[in-house]
Image 1 (spheres, helix red, strand yellow):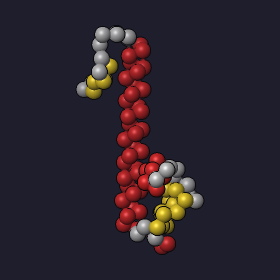
Image 2 (cartoon, one colour):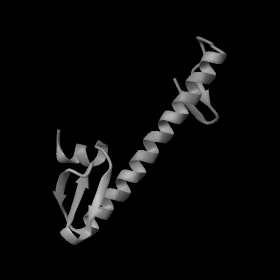
Image 3 (cartoon, one colour):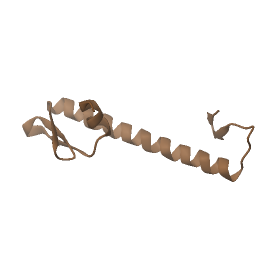
Image 4 (tube, helix red, strand yellow):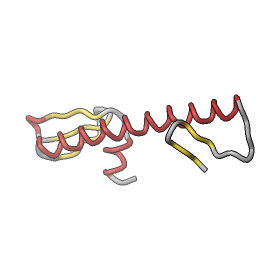
Length: 83
C-alpha cells in the first residue's frame, strides 16, 4: 500500500504542525510542512464527503428501483441516470 493510499483512505488524520508531520490513526507518521498537511487534510475531508454522498445517492437509487422495478428502464434519480 502506498503512502498516498494511507493518507487518503486510511484512518483519522492528525496534524502536528510543531513537529512538521501528519499522522494516520495516531501511529503512522509522515513528515511534511504545515501547508502540505493542511492541503492533505482539506482534500481528505472533501474526498470523504464525496464518497459519503455517492453512497447516499446510490442507496436512494437502489431503494427506489427495488420499490418500483422496471427491467427496461434505467435507474434514475432526478437528473442523475445510471444506465
